[in-house]
Amino acid sequence: MAYEAVKGKLARGETVLLDGGVGTEILRRGVYWRGHGIEQHPEAVRQVHSDYLAAGAEVLRTNTFQLNRRAYLDLFHGLEHMRRIGPEGLEHKAGRLLAQGVELAREARNGAGRAGLAVAGVISPLAHCFRPDLSPPLDQCRREYGEIVEQMKAAGVDFILLESMNGVREARVACEVARSSGLPVWVSFVVRENAQVLSREPLAEAVKAVEPLGVDVIAVNCAPLADITAAVAELRQHRTGPIGAWAHIGRYDPPSWKFGFYPRFSGTESVPPAQYLEAAREWKRIGAQVIGGCCGTGPEHVRALRDGL
Amino acid sequence: MSEGYEKLKARFQNGEIIILDGGIGSEMLRRGVTWEGHKVESEPAAIRAIHADYIRAGADVISTNTFQLARRSYMNHFADAEHMKRIGAADLSRRAPLLIGEGVKRVLEARDQVGRRDVLVAGAMTTLDWCFRPDVAPSLEEMHAEYRETVQAFKDAGADLMLFETFNSSKEARTALEAAREAGIPAWVSFVCDWQGKLLNGETVPQTREGLAGVEPDVLLFNCAPVPDITLALGELSRELRKRPGPRMGGYAHVGRFDPPDWMFTDEYPPAQYLSACREWVSLGAQVLGGCCGTTPMHIEALKKGLPRTLPV
Image (cartoon, rainbow over the protein chains, first blue to last red):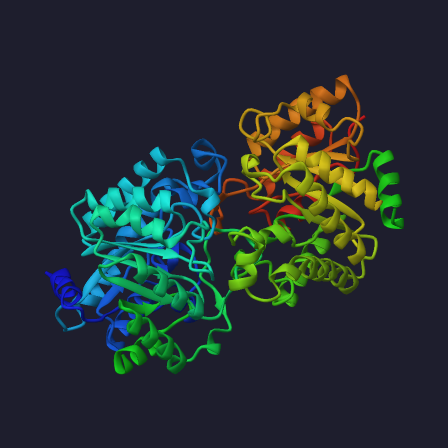
């Protein structure tokens, strides 16, 4: 099984190399960000995955960040309004894209000609990843994560990665639901510069909430290098099992039009692979076992990690 | 008040029909200008060309390509100001007023290019938060400050009037109208309607007018809904205005389907059919007609050629 190899490495204290930014890399290659590029440019999406594998990644993240029913529904007054003015079947679009997105990562993995590679089914917070204030009520979270986890499992991911979780409450429910599927689960939190979760809750609380649920990895992501370094150190204080880290580079640069998370980061050249590697070495020294890149990083960053860690 | 707007008021008095432009964002997509933002600064020629085509088609009023362009549109992507400063691009907080200025310039340039200085520039602005979500509207206090800032940016850039469009509550419309009044710029308000002739927050037409008491705009319109829904809402408005006269009325429907982040074009209302719908709205008393998402310069040309010059007496 693909995940067994990864699990073995984690158990032996070895480093597991994650891929880099998926959405930002797709955008960088000129793909128009519509339906995550999945329907109109599947070959480009698959190529990004393949390029990360060629660069040395052992875990691929699916291009499914924020692909959930709510992301579309939030743009309408409600389901009735969506049906009135939206195209037929829009309410099922997220699920459809998710399955296709997972398949593209699986195809890239199966074509890599290397064993021991795992596909992580990426699930983001239900509302905008940077807006903990928009997190839905618990019963809705439970229902919606239930549906997404089910879709991920049916699509054939090796494990679930709850990524860029922005608050303890939603992360806990997400972990519970994901664990109940029987799949292995990793969870990663967006952090602020003071090693707090974006919701301003201490990382210690986040660890306390999700650790008993049996997650294999707890990580921090989607913050600048220095903030991730501070957060990894804090995480190490509170978590004995495997931890992970991936930072974004450049500056989040959303367009003048509000459509959820749009993966554009500008000024990414400010952190070349060698500099990223330097920070990642520090994360490894602190104890991070899962290391990769978040938004803005590309295959060259992952290659530098493979060669230099 | 600008000289152009004075003239427009005289035309209103004469009962003349005033033609608005059609969709802009959707027209960009139809022309293959992908939509990752308004592109008023990055694709100036493309935006100018769309405005110019609407002027040539016969629009009397051109709206700026600035829908949903406000400070909040960027802020909403971050947890708070501190987070935005930490991870966001450096100029995000300055972008909205800058792009508003650019957006107005593109219309002014198009006017010059076509040689039609008499065409009016409407500063297009929707609700501060998402236009279809009255439930996420900011507090009154925040609204006041943000409308004041945004309306001033339009006025400074040279807009003749404000077109507050795709609004979802009388409360927010009232706040916007107050800001326009303070800034000394005329304003029209256009509401999205549902399929029952109500605003998205559930307000009926009479309730909406009550909510605007004392600050009613020169023109009250409905937009961003399918043709039959606009017809229904304008019917309600027509009955209401017969009981209690007030603003002039207008409407512009969308044609096709909102397929985020894009627009899906359909052939339900080609120009001739859209013209028939607008004729019906004129018969209800609508004096300002145009097109929302999915309509094209061909639709506006059909209105210019096919609508009566004045309201029926």
